[in-house]
Length: 98
Image (cartoon, rainbow, N blue to C red; front, top):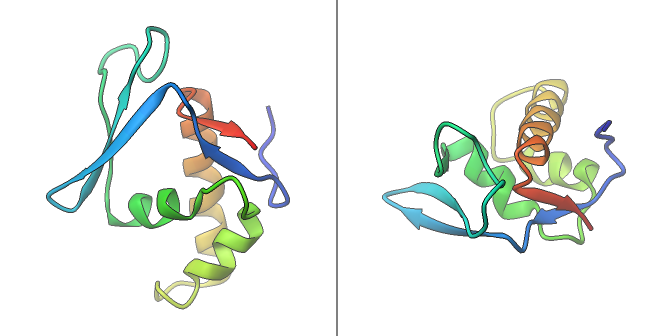
């Protein structure tokens, strides 16, 4: 599956996410979701900022635009980070296309 900037994603209904000590912890609610070796998936500050914008209404391009003022990085770097994280989360079935 290819991930494009015009795509819109949201958290899967089969996961629950909680913030604990500044990190997002994503917990699968059903079997077959997440990483086979570890049932929990954690996101650092950058991942958390991206996750918070994946609301099922914003395109990935909108997410990149919203994050640009927050991070001291070129748009190309932010774009690559967003696309890479979304691809990883989709592969683990933690995100679904809206």
